[in-house]
Length: 341
Image (cartoon, rainbow, N blue to C red; front, top):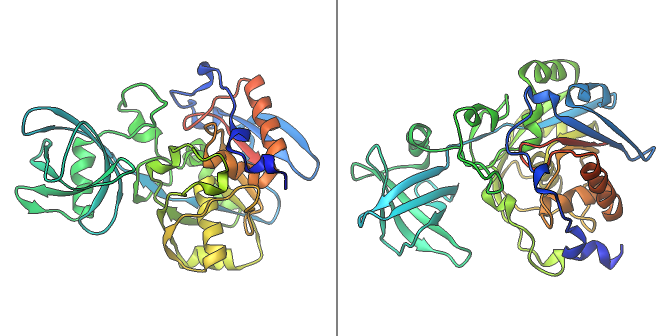
């Protein structure tokens, strides 16, 4: 292990702006796929529609079935000042951790359409706030908020997609197997699957679903000089009995995305089926249960790029990203994919 692998600066790279994908590939499986085989050290450049032919025999796939909620809300203060609120995660039945664009203090009331009101309860040093939601003076539980925001909220596109969300994003920024509501960012490797391809893969390979509600912390860059000093964000996860059975077996696993990977690896270490996962995978904390991973191309200095390096080592991760940039792969949430075998 070289010190270089623990330096945040080692995970920096410059990306031409035109390689940031602002719209998804259409159809989904027409995205490019870079395949890196660690056993042979070979790199292949194909389309995602070819994904199935690269799945190793006897391998099981694990998907994250979280569903993105319309977490971005636009409202007003009593003074009339405009406010943008981004739901990050539910802390319990009534307390919701959010980010607010606009000045607020404790007890500030924010008014939305459909008589929805948020009242600020706490201000945190990391810039997040805790609010409670009400409708017609009745306190709402988190699950009661969901149908309301589905009607009045907006798709929480990542900050680097510098455009307003549109009607297409409601379906495109969601996997075809999304089921459990609660994420504010999509598990992006999953976005490449068409309904037909997902059904076909599931018919031909053992598979299971885990749930990890992706929070906005996923976009937070590492700011410490040494990556091991980074305070990893935590996210709610749940593993069904069927998924537990698969994870407890010795069948090889191809994890669909970094979020599935973090969930599987957290379970492998703690053996707890649900709770809060805050596992940080990097070259000094390698995967123990996941054998192969499908993932997108991630932000510089992100924990997700460090997770990729936990599979390949730093130098190979740098080389793969350099190749992807040279070959004009599209990066980030709506971008192309990489399969590490």
